[in-house]
Image (cartoon, rainbow, N blue to C red; front, side):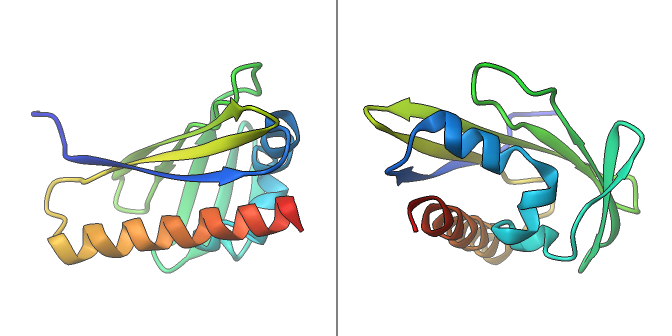
Length: 132
């Protein structure tokens, strides 16, 4: 497989990175800002289950860490696994939240742009929650 096109979508947040990480990394908080998981997440062993537009999906997170990494893999009902890199990085007294969007094979330009806009909206929601 060749390298997929990628786009890094980020938002500056005027709040300590550890606070943002603690909030954003908690699966029970994700429906408050990650609209793709608006139905909520239910624990299923080490993973989490959500129901949404793509049907039932399994979300597997990396363990909590000291590096601000909230990477997670989403497995949809068809078996397609999508890797999502999400990072919280210190920036002065605040932080940067960065999501790496990978364009999966078969995704149209319109779908890629729609996903990017969706992620930007979610990061704006996280910013509003953390700064509000």
